Length: 116
Image (cartoon, rainbow, N blue to C red; front, side, top):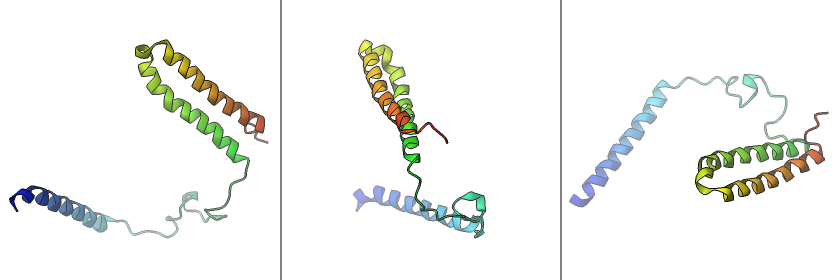
């Protein structure tokens, strides 16, 4: 039993901490207001269902957003290591940007950048 005393005591301390935090949250919780608990529209009554379908014109806009988002996701770490890796990293980044540019050009052709 001596070998299990340490892990068992840590488990009991963790469970006591979780229980204490749960009790503290229950005691200090604000009583919910049904009007302000609506999931969107700042508490105003919704005019449509929250799971309503989106118009198909938003999907190309989403692709453009993802193209720029993924570009920034990879350019920040690339900027940190480009000096260490050398010219190969520059070529790889331009290939990556070319692939993303193809996606943006496709979305442009599909009319994702028109707002009319």
